Amino acid sequence: MKNYKVQTKELFEELCMEMKIKKPPFRISGGGLNAFERFGRIIITKDLAKMISTNYRTVRYLLTHELIHLKYQDSKTRVARLGILAFSIPEWIPFEHRVKAYTLLTELRASIEGYSFNKYKEIDEIIKIENSTKDPKFFNKEIAYKYGYPSTEQIANYASKYEKLTEELAREVLNDFCMVRKIKDADKDKFINKTLARFRVLFIDNRKDNL
Image 1 (cartoon, one colour):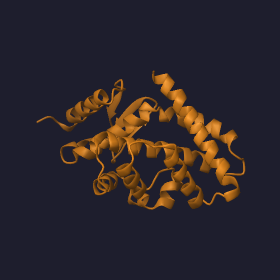
Image 2 (cartoon, helix red, strand yellow):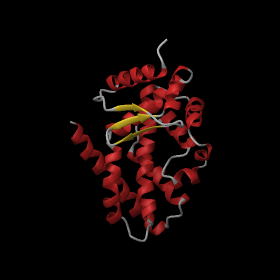
Image 3 (cartoon, one colour):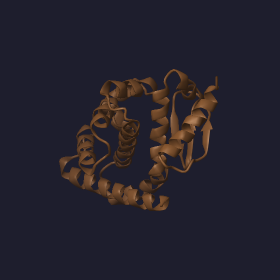
């Protein structure tokens, strides 16, 4: 029987082919249950990779999620957005809100497209996958927003219904973010419109880079 490292590497290569993404550098390293994309490199922890024989669908989804971040070059735009959002949104709105709102959209997009690609559309299964690796505190939307993430419940509800993150859905989520994070109504529309406008520009620029 193949060991977990070989199995995980083979799964990763299969996903790259299925998703038509040029295979990036890949590494199995570190502890905890996590996978992440950093500047064109995909890293999965040893503890998560070891789950491949008992929890294959979770490992498959998380690798897909990170490859979607790579597809949109989200780690690259994290750097870009720090400067861009600092000057494009009213200065009286805390900088933290601007960055977390943008991160929220990138994470929700990777979640929706990741579950959609794998055809995991049952709410109960999505919640099970999320809870198998994620801190339970992220079931609480207020805490999740504080870190720039959608809550487990939001991911399950949206991923079970949608194939893509549409502008209408992004606007709905940002409206909710403003309410939970207590952004004033007088500032809300401008905050949402600027965040969405910048999200679209960076998305288009990065897709051009991938052509």
